Amino acid sequence: MDSFKNQMNRRSALMAMGTSALGLAAMRLPLYADNSAESMRKVLPKFSEKSRELLRRRVGEREFSGQISTSDADQLGRNENIDVDRLMLELIALAETYSRAPISNFHVGVVVRGTSGALYLGANIEIPGQCLGFAVHAEQAALSNAYMHDEQGVAALAVGGAPCGHCRQFINEMSPDGGILILMPGKGPVKLSSILPDAFGPAALGMKHGAFPVRRNELALGGTSASPLAVAALEAARKSYAPYSKSPAGVALQSTSGRVYRGSYIENVAFNPSLSPLQIALAAMIVAGEGYANISGATLVEAQSANISQRAVTETVLAAIAPNAKLQVVSAAA
Image 1 (cartoon, rainbow, N blue to C red):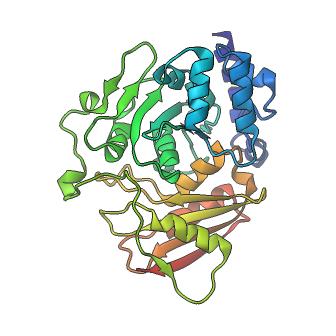
Image 2: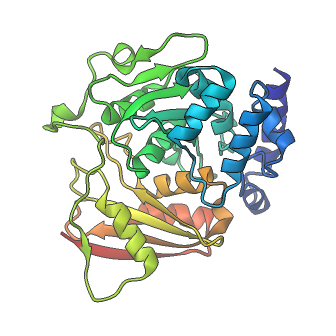
């Protein structure tokens, strides 16, 4: 409980700064920004020093992307003498440190297990001054993390409390058979189908599968040359899941650190909650330990024949969080 209070006090102090430009700059890293052994101990007090050090090293790696490999997850389970479900529940506290919730001050972390055995972190994101519809729920962030890592499917999702209806609908697109396990503290695992009976799923609009496994389309850029950021955005657009609007799109964000973060559009049969490519790219950037102030450039790739466009919402949100980052919009053809 003391650890939880400490985390909340630190969050309250940082989130109080969140509405100012200075606050956004200060929130470039997770809440344990120093990545010290002491900070990791506060986040994961029940873990052994051996496990905390393993995680501290991974999180501190330059290319960390919110993924805990299958081998690392196995090692953590052995270190703590717990099964993978319990491990996921314990790691919720780590995922929660990536939360960006300056509007609600309600912080949620989620851990997803892919069918490969790898674990994926995600946390809720709110954009200061923007409509609540652009918020990313922690379940969405973690699932999109698994998607962007080309997982073939999802087996389980650990969260601190029962997912809201919005998230249950989104999870259903990832596991239309309702078989994904929902893990919550103090409760036994339950299948999604038991908390989302009579689901409205992809089959209602003629689909025979959901978002997983990730499939690629044949979009291509015209011309003889393209910028590296446009190529990265095209890669994201080619793996977008847009069966209902037939409007694949992808975003690539350039960071001042030199890293590039991609986001693929992911639709839902209910339309809302779909995730825009920018939302997914921002979630990837945050779970990697960077923040909005680090965005130096952005490219959106959309299909020429798209029935809907991501341009307006991408421009609006970028103007709010990274006003100096110019958006390039590129059309691609099948």
